[in-house]
Length: 185
Image (cartoon, rainbow, N blue to C red; front, side, top):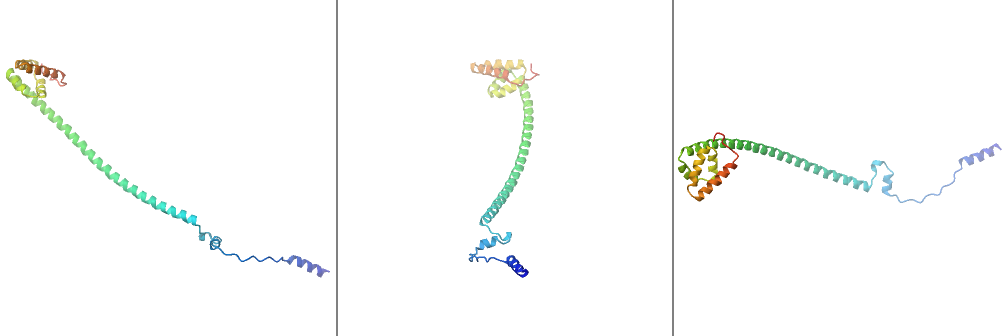
């Protein structure tokens, strides 16, 4: 009896149900690769993304190089503009100094001319002044004393109606002149 029980127990314990054999499957190389290690994994979408990223990186590298070239060019132009600006400032300073010097020299010359015309006979001075342009006459008359100017205007007015009208216009322009000779009275 013990033998039968051991026989039955051993039969149940080691009993295997036979499995139905699977039909041989067609092996897909892509699936076979997927089952392998991850570094052997091939995905066309991932390859396309990698290619796009490489192209984008190359494009960004070219743009960065272009920006560097543009920045270098802008720096060169900025330095050139600074040099030109400094030279313009220097020229402006020189010009202003020359204008001031010339104005001072002209003032001295106008004072001298005013003195010469004041010492002349008013009739002769008026004939000379009649031949000059109005701006020059005004510049000279500003430096003359009122008595001397009056005598020249009188002599100019005696030369005819046109010269009298010119004397009146010149007198009005002298009134509007901003520069006054403080020494002339």
